[in-house]
Length: 387
Image 1 (cartoon, rainbow, N blue to C red):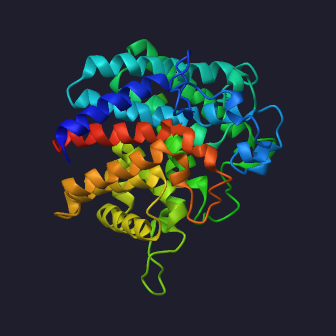
Image 2: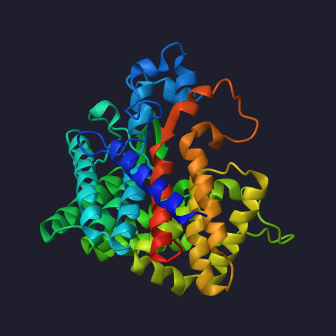
């Protein structure tokens, strides 16, 4: 890979990343790839509502959320997590002042989500569709938000900001417990976690233990951290990626990649969580085998989701510490190219066989989330001295 071309792309993508923050610092999910501006209602003119919501009927059934609001403000906490991770690596690569300026904008956006949710209920972090207070939230938003706060707390925050972050984490954890792990998503009641059911593959419940672990560490609340630890141990069997009957990779790993990505991401930024995992799991086997499983996923679908691309890069870097030559510079460059392809056209991230005509509008949406993935991968590689 030409280092000058790679640096030029980084400069261009950082300029685009700055455009993905709205006036309050909230990270947008997408922007219009042609105008490089936030998407508006006119972008979806001529489409029926379900089509404009990417075929999700339960989302389209909620008249209060317009398509432009969904494509702008879906999971801003998760997006902030990725952008702040990129900025933290940029700081470590030798650009602390530049990284701090942008990180401060992102932190203001996180505070805005707290303010909006708090207008309805103490501790609620809402999805800020249309910048309106609402009861809408999700485990992705809660976990992503706590990860974003963790990164800002450790790399950029002042002492006053650290105290504010700790207080907010306690409020949100109390909100989750007060509602018995239940929340509302597009008008439907959902469970963040179920103690009365065994954990299984293809579940978001593995993100909840990390939320409590991170919240507990940030707030210095051992009870919250212990709750997260108990939940984590319940998920031990899910981290066995091989089918015990034949030793082959589980077919549902394509969905499980998100859990792997969240666990590894949390371990990468939270040394206490990483130490907990290493004390209770075969961490070397987990890292190396999960990396191999991610590669198996690519053989099935070369347009694997951006999170999978980053899993391959992040886990591969970790795997290299445990198994020589597991990942090389050339493979890291391949991951960057894969993320870039999906960033420039969300349609390329659809599963094979998806209706191309139905999702044609996705060609024009630039994925800010994938943009942050690319920048995180670039700056993490820079820290490794790969470019």
